[in-house]
Length: 339
Image 1: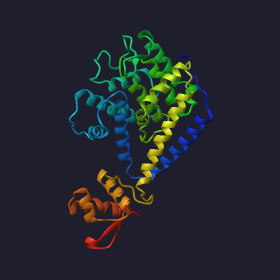
Image 2: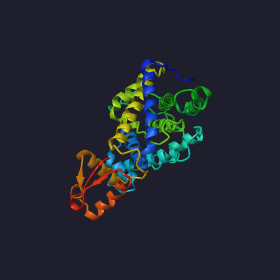
Image 3: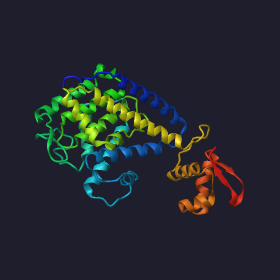
Image 4: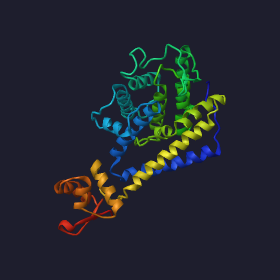
């Protein structure tokens, strides 16, 4: 593949325009929304869960969220390590990679993080030395990647294009989607190619300014319909590398992911005039509880969350002080509602 081939279809243009508008709304909203760290942690867990689940990892989202919090879970070592590696890869990407060109050493480092303790050291972070293949659930070969001798030069060609002025002029969604398909089609590693391609896509959305707050969980879209995901990848190969429909699919995923993110931000219905505080998980749950009921008293919260009166008061006071909740009444008859 010398250079990517695609057309800017009306549908692709429409999706990119909507994605850009949603991104702008979210970028403005997180200035006022105080629970950005919570959203970032959640996005990382969802990315790790969905990207590994695409390739058969059996851990559930709650399992992955527990691992992200540093908790121990009763799970086999291999799937647990796979998830921990993906979380580590996201932390690595999001801590200091902004504005950095994606070079060969960095890409190999990304693969090494993703396959730590999964592949032998001679294969982790290194190009493949044996021919590999892509098979369907029945074991039938659906795609034979380029041979090992071409893995390095083809990957270098991809990276050269990514850092070219031509790629720099493209919208972030297009550049990221092209890199995703290009890398997974080269299949330069003995294993972990899908995870590496999806992580590279997240990396490019970040470095090119489209996910500066780390709120994307685009891989959830791919995981939700794995059959369509794999079919779109293969269809582009069968169409002599025309990526037009694949890029429409990626842009559709970005739009759907951003819509879900916007819905979550809106769901708390907090006042943008409130002082900035960092909400705990329990405080977020309490705000949702009050939102859903319209109004709640301390005994309601004590019963719903199995907390003492003193603990409920500790949770509520910062929310009232920040004007995220309105306190009405006195003593045990006191109730709370959203502004």
